Image (cartoon, rainbow, N blue to C red; front, side, top):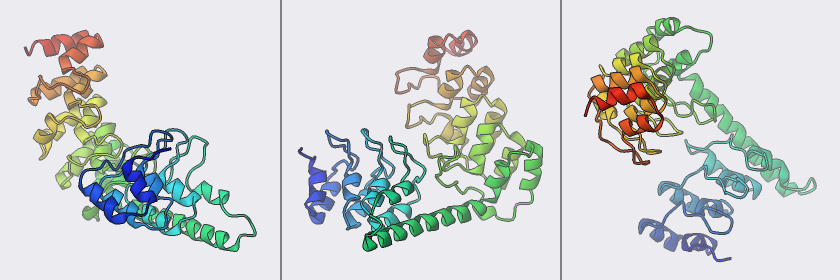
Amino acid sequence: MTLPALHQLITQGDLAGFTQALQDGADPNQLDPTMGNAPLHIAAQRSDIAFVQALLEHGAFINQQVPKHGVTPLMVAVWHRKPALVACLLADKYINVEISSHFGLKAQQLIDLGAADDDQFGQQQAEQIRALFEQHHKRQLKQQAAMEAFNIVTAPSSSDQEKASRMRALSQLQTLNATSAITSSGNDEHTAVMVAARDGLVASLRQLMELGGDQQIPDHYMQAIPLYKAAYNGHAAVIELLAGYPGFQEALNAQGPNNGYTPRHDAVWHGHLKAAQALIDAGADTKLRAYDGTTPLELAEEYQYQELVELLGAEK
């Protein structure tokens, strides 16, 4: 099997050539044609973290899964018993330890697939790696505990009004716009503003914005900003509220990097008439085309939302 050039530089241990290739524009996420390993998967087998660090600095996807078996670079490092590499990867803010391979195991579960019971050195490595995961977990808990506003807005048993009331007594405004940890929770890299906009918590959102909430911070999954979430879920009152705060005009016609949809596309996608009207009232652009080639009007026609077709068609 012939590996792509960047992969080969890793296997040859040519760090200088490898670094130069990245600087010259080599793709840090290119997959090999046989297994689908990215350069980061190959680098995670080595004992030298410099290759991993260089890849991450040049935009390598840290949680990339191999198409055939679903293994991530972190899983590779654990499986090959590379404590220094495991520590390097776990220190990255985007690492996701909750991903499962196609054979059903997470990275931490691969520790037990390593050294034999009588392999003293291997068992020591396994204990080192196990301790690294425990330290990572403690860091996440500490980070989450400090996110006062986020913890209020995600509290399951409180009403919107109760959350807004608690928000007025916030003592840690420095974490107001902090993003949550990546834990495959559905809230990965969400701010309190993002959650409130997504869930239609108007009273909570108003209080957050008055305190200095930022509506330009994207989430982890789609790089979506709060206005997208509000439009997608049909929260017209949230759209109207966000329109009165800094960052709204920049968000109004922004196209998401996942599908090229604007907030208006998102409102139309699921037939949210009132949300679409709120965006029209705010002055949203009618002509922008998404990656699928559609304008919001054409999307409404495709999904046969007649009321939206009439609303959007009236703008011509």
